[in-house]
Image (cartoon, rainbow, N blue to C red; front, top):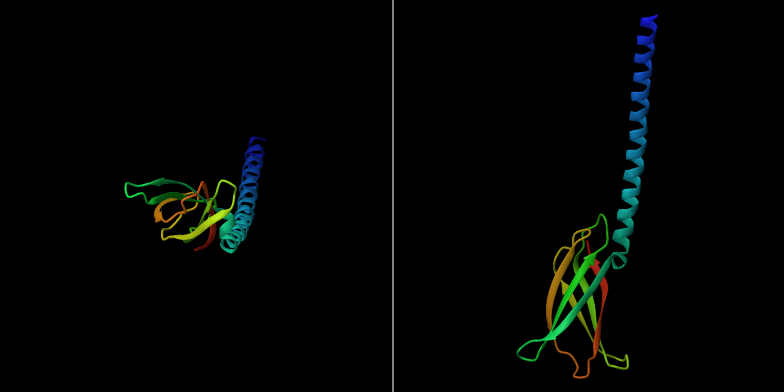
Length: 137
């Protein structure tokens, strides 16, 4: 009787191990498929996964210095050569000037890159906005 219990235990043990391995393989295949789909989406639309922000200040020569950050929300793709549009607005919301700044650094997934640029701004500029235009991968 004890031999039957031992034999039954061994059979159940091996069956459960085999089922788990097959389940893991299916999970791995599904994960790789989702990862490939996510990577394709991130490569196709880099603007959706990158955010730019920043501030401005005047240096001792009265030049406007823009201190900005580019943040990568993507999970897989590393972006580089990010092109950012910096817009300067009046108090009434009229666009006074727009400048393009290219950040020549790699932005890792979930990472942030800082940049500093000296720009000529209109005298009446009250606020500014940042928009990512494009990026390479």
